[in-house]
Length: 325
Ligand code: AVI
Image (cartoon, rainbow, N blue to C red; front, side, top):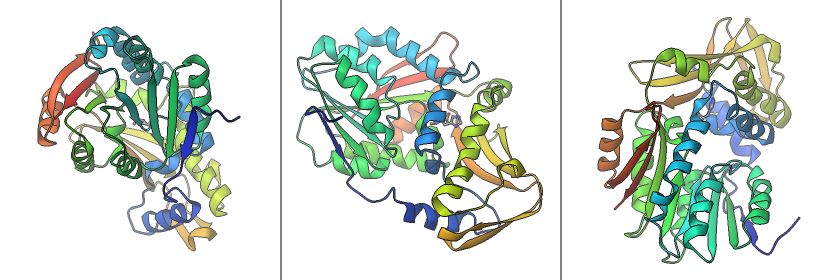
């Protein structure tokens, strides 16, 4: 279904099958194996992530949403009549509604520019158009970097860049800080950044959030193997691999792995690779960094931004940070 209020652009071919093949050939080829978490998000992976957001142990989404609904009025006071909402990694756009509700109170015409690596972007936008009749959407299907590049081609209107769900935490150590600098370098004087970050906490709570009893996170993690089977012609036997999530206290992060349960060889024809896995060998699939308030302030400052507000939930599990130049 097409709408004159929805445009979807795919500026780069960066999300193509060929780059998936090349990337996994490289990251599974060395002695310490990994898979970049951006490959989680095919249609099935995006749907599974949506489901993770509703499991009881994964407090991140509900906590962020409850903070957002509580601070709506205050956030509105920072918005101009022509502020455009840009969202990095919009996914299913569920929390977006809470921000659009705030914009609706301040603006006659609303503009939303979601940037996501997954095709589900277009689908989730249709629901938004139905519910917000004064909304125009330009969806960008691309990596974060491609999306930010696109941002620099836009007119002078102020942007509220939302980067929610603690997605910054999925960058490798040091890379997240660099990416924050990159966002800052794309921001104009009137732009703002709304950053959602998960706070460091007890390891038991964190490990449960990344290894839920319903096994949704396990399916999400292992789905990347199914994706390789389908898209790259690989022959991973899903029953011979298992999901693992471990808290690394010194690095302040959850680390997700796929463990090989046997000595086995797997062919990945499209990547021109044959990969040998030892029993107990771990493939690192994701880091999810956790933050402290002092560390957040420091990161924001080092990126050349000022902190306008920090909001937290009552149990200090999560923080929403508003920053600008
Ligand atoms: C998208 N990202 C912020 C999630 C996280 O919490 O790191 C991805 C995720 N991985 C396992 N569960 C959720």
